[in-house]
Image 1 (spheres, one colour):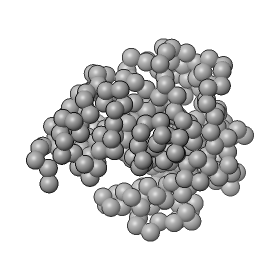
Image 2 (cartoon, rainbow, N blue to C red):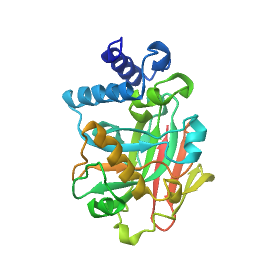
Image 3 (cartoon, rainbow, N blue to C red):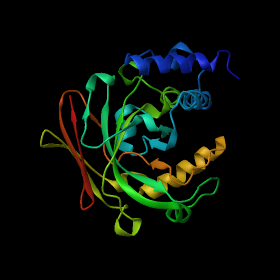
Length: 260
């Protein structure tokens, strides 16, 4: 039980997102905020978004790779809701000033053909539920000043979600080796980071099972047609300046976009 109104936290984060102006960490302003109440804050904002015309289209897992946890000083994954308004078309120009302090991640995304709900979801359950996989970019962004976050802060901030770009090369799982697929980020033609899908809990399919079981504690069920993002395969790179990004999974597909 908190001694403050979670709607106040939610409203402050919504304003920070809308204005692209960061705020102090919610755990500093509201010291009683913990991981459970942080998740309730993101749920309040998800419901607010849907009420005002947005659409819930999936869920994300973040900070699952050790390189990501080390980069942002966290020792536990975060998770959040995915809304249609956060999806950006591949190949389009992205305005840098719409973000606060963004980073670029590369990960597989999965589109489901049947529902998933924990507890006790296994990797086999996930494989049976996935229709296809797509290369994806997540632009993470924090509404907290200088990314000075603890787990309750990033949970309240919807897992620091900024924008999602889905690629155009869907593949069946049988056509991929997701336990060992190399990924890379190039900025203005120069390779700036590499990684491997094995960094996502050994296999990103396992990460989806973990997420389904974790969110079952909040009575959340993944629905057919929804997009599930299991987390980045590499350390995120700052998206600081205008330029051209080319992000690829070896033998699978490339996603490109321009920042202006």
